[in-house]
Amino acid sequence: MPNLNRVTEKLFQSPSKYIQGPSVIHHAPKYLSSFGAAPLLLSDDLVYQIAGKELKTALEIANFKVTRGIFGGEASKDEITRLGALSKEKSVDFIIALGGGKTIDSAKAIADDLGLEVAVLPTTASTDAPCSALSVLYRPNGEFENYRFYSNNPSVVLVDTSIIVQAPARFLASGIGDALATNLEAKAARNSPNSGGGLPTEIASAIGAKCEEILFKYGRQAVEANKAKAVTPAFEAVVEANTLLSGLGFESGGNAVAHAIHNGLTAINNRVLHAKMHGEKVAFGVVCQLILDGAPTSEMDRYISLMVSVGLPTTLTDLGIENATDEELRLVAALACAPNETIWNMDRVITEDIVFNAIRGADIVGKDYKVRNGL
Image (tube, rainbow, N blue to C red; front, side, top):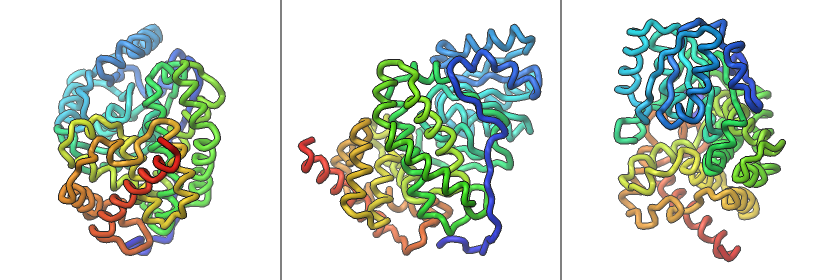
């Protein structure tokens, strides 16, 4: 149950700087120069071709000595150890994360292990990882392992929207799924300590509410702009909501059911499910959150309507596990209820059986919405 240690202090945390706009990658040397002159540039091969070469050139023109670290694809302890050893060998003095959530989470862990600062340059707006002082770590097979918390947030977050708009619109939609959980989970966790160990502040609540407002106002419009590779005001607003507002909102507001369900889903051995993005699985967790919140049908429809409009999953069929057995879904429920999971931030009775029924209930309401709307 919430706040067993009777915490009374409120706490808000954030990165030192957040910069967003088209072509900001060209100004990276200005924002990174105070951290050192010999960074590890961490990215996978695809991202390196898209944006890494350009960033490396900009840094080397400004006399940075750049070591390239090739990210293997999974934010696992083995990968973090391997890249940490490379960083030591090359005597790097800060870490640059260029890529998606798992690249970013790995970079944060490497920086923490080495006592270095980390700069985050996301190439998608698919998660709220860039701003937070935590990493989600996985086993090499992709199964959730644990959260890792840090004493400091990233030193700077540079968001180049001219790069982000080149990513498939599915990435932005996934970020919307992740960000939609922010306000709902923060409200459910309002009496529990947040990621920093303090109670949520009023500003954290306001950020969560603003994040949700932007998603409902501009979400579909932004995804359509992304499909056309157009950096519009709606696109910029949703990138900010997915990255900054959701990042600050979840970390200082708190998580609850939606992310616990996501973590549980990673244990089902299903190829289609494993191919789903973080925010896509969280989106189904949002429906589970609404079930446990006792949301009326009108409220449920409001969220499902937005999710369906941007292509997010709202049923087990959408996740590719329409044939999941009760045993598999009870495993999801059991993992969602693991000790120290965020589901225990809920200010209500939680059991594995209650969560199993919430998963079944979420699938039912998602199907019902589609039947009623001829989808």
